[in-house]
Length: 258
Image 1 (cartoon, rainbow, N blue to C red):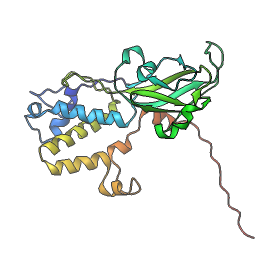
Image 2 (image 1 turned 30 degrees about the horizontal axis):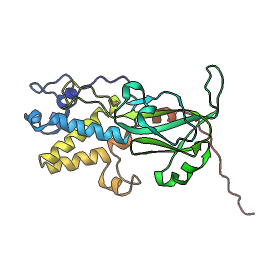
Image 3 (image 1 turned 90 degrees about the vertical axis):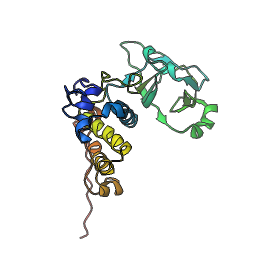
């Protein structure tokens, strides 16, 4: 994946286009209307991109937080503790993983076994908050990260997280599009869907919904039948990398009767 190269203006009016001289983008998908700026096209794009970056992982929004040591007997930690200093106070959409080392020190050049914590609801962890042991689970609740069981040793930990897509307030034409470049078209259709709904262009809205999420049969069957949409067909860099990894195959041989 190449680094982000598009702006909201590129998505709204086509790459290299402007509101005065549009070439494509949302403008082309909404019957080449000349009043998109007045109608709020950049707000449509912001809302669409924020929704996409809440539901899917994107490499240019993901970060790795600092390694720090848990406090013995403490099960909840402010979210900022897990974030890079420059991300303090930012909205974190996704928490893909928390890694915990098994010994209380991390020495460069030496091995230290580790594993990732599993997510559970705050209710499922309630009893384990009172039980000392090796932290195995985590959850997010009330602006804090909670872990269980209660740490019996000062284990080192770090978290991978995804921040909310950054925008100016209000969104500006020069704002950078930080999703992977092949999601540009999806963002354009998602913004056009919002615009078509606001403008009561319901035939366009229905068409763009199906383009994004698949035809009605695909949606009714949860992907079992029908034509998939653009979102289903796109894969992230991480998922693409996993497709190229070797996988173990276990043959299943049934025994035939004599």
